[in-house]
Image (cartoon, rainbow, N blue to C red; front, side, top):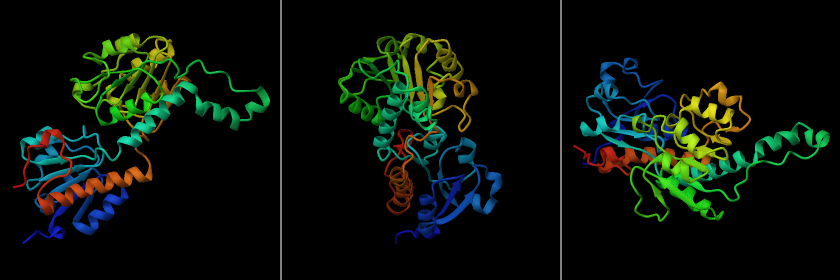
Amino acid sequence: MPEQLSDVTILVTGAIHERVLARLAKEFRLVRIERADLSLVDDAVRNSVRGVSAVSGITASFIDGLPKLEIVANFGVGYDGVDARHAGGKNIMVTNTPDVLTEEVADTAIGLLLNTLREFSRAENWLRDGRWVKEGPYPLTRATLRGRKIGIVGMGRIGKAIARRLEGFGLPIAYHNRRPAQDVSYPYFDTLGGLAHAVDTLISVAPGGAATEKMVGAAVLSALGPEGVFVNIGRGSTVDEEALAAALADGTILAAGLDVFAREPHVPQALLDLPNATLLPHVGSASVHTRNAMADLAVDNLVSWFSKRVAITPVPETAHVTAG
């Protein structure tokens, strides 16, 4: 006889989308804690939890403290805040929410790139502040998308969606990945520095984690050059923010557009002070439509796991995991 989902305990750690909470509450026995800290629950709860719904912060020790844990459903395509490798080693499934946010994030990347180059938000402020009337037209922008050569760091789902959009602008595209992508024909560079030397516009969609920590630093920015523009829609941890601020301040590169930061929601003052930095508060997938789709996929993974014993979108580190 199929298991009753209402008998399954799901632990929600920290703030999460309201749609996730509403759907989980209808399907499962729900326990909420304000952060991923097992001292916030008693032994009875720890010994009953079989699933975790989270945005990040799921460490190896947290996983080890839940003896009956079977699955961690991460809200978001990025899951560097979940120790998926450790989970996989313990036959615990980890899922994320790919695909449903790809197009939205790619749209944001293009908007951020255009805004960084053409200074649309500053031009709007010029109008709103009455300066158009008092001082005349907004100054001509030094930068343009015309004639640029694009380099994409991370040719995964989102990177490919960005590339497809930029093809429509008639721009040449190259990329850097850990390995060549099999389904694209763009020129591939096996080093990030080599890509930066070859282009003047670098768009990063790279995931977080130890392997990519501060991969965009002084050397890469110097290679990009004085007409260079850097856009980051991936993870803030991949950028040496101090080096980036210095490169923007001294003219090593022309401008940067950032939607992500290393210590969100805290943004370095050095970046805030720069007129050639366009800064967004991590809004890449932040539309009602897309966040609802992400919420549904996060919950659907839990429902599928406990009703059909399979996950819909397992992460690579746990693709081998099977239900006991």
